[in-house]
Length: 255
Image (cartoon, rainbow, N blue to C red; front, side, top):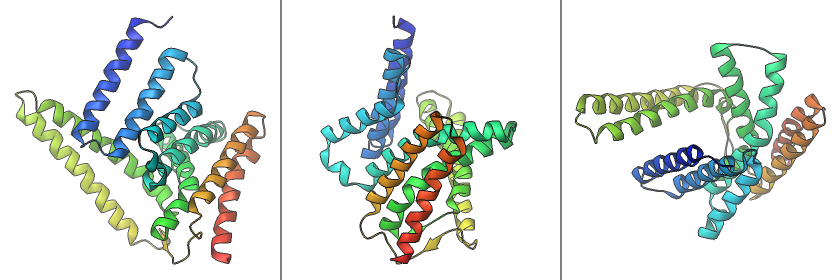
């Protein structure tokens, strides 16, 4: 039986997130994220043991029923492909390295963040290459820092908005400056990374308007990897998506 407290947490959470979406101007990307988060929370409240991948599929379907043409948008494609990759690959990858490379504290956070960043990179690269002509392997490491700073910036911005309703201008100003500082550090880190050799590769090569197809193939490898991992073939499962990604990269530059 679903407890009243669970529903209270659910409605409080989606209202707060919805408020933040409105503060940002409710762009389609933020609305997509809000629908995704709301469905994940709802499934957890109602079903207890829900399937994240099924919930993600329902969220995508709802967005497409609302605005069917979003399927053609790069933001939509990246959003759902990357989250799917995190669901089916990042978790098993983290578990594997937790058992083979036990660490604690900051080092454990870096190890786990690397697994998350790698998972997103594998599936998103074909789309990014097609759209921008850039292949950025260095982004795997850079994202570890950027995601942490982005979380700080979003948290600071949210607190600044909340304190703007209270007669505590000093705290509102403090969180505004904290958010700005986080964003400034992010920009400085990106500028510094762009000066490093092999951080990214700009190329005229594309996957011939088939970046989405390539990303879907890599997602298929991730799903197969997830199944292999559940059958006990751990290292084979985790290497399959990487090999598929490398095969795509070779085909792009060979054709």
